[in-house]
Amino acid sequence: MSRSSFFSSFLNVLHADAEEKEEVVVSTQTEEAEQVEEDAEEPEDSHPEIRDECKASTKCAPLTRHFEHCQEKISAGEGYKGEDCVEELCTMMHCVDACAGPKLFSKLK
Image (cartoon, rainbow, N blue to C red):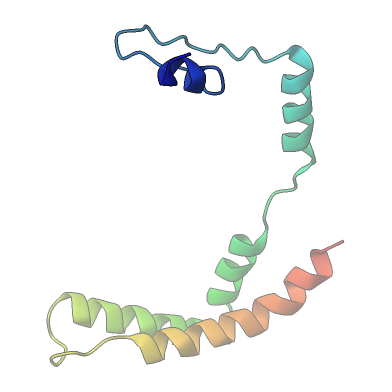
């Protein structure tokens, strides 16, 4: 018994010139029906809508305008070197999250 025949008895032998066989996966109608049911059960995320409402609220609107003004100033190149709007963003998002939190958790199951 040669070495190659010994090893080929344990391992599959692949030849470079051999054509590859493609495996075809057939999905059944039951799998598709299960996927549709899963998609139908998942509720729509209301968090972005709630955050947008809070950004426009009387409490957070001035902070939102201040952040947008800062972004416009930086985009136009009018800010000083290295200036960013991180502080304005954090302040605005803190207000938005404080407003959206109770509304969001009241809608959860």
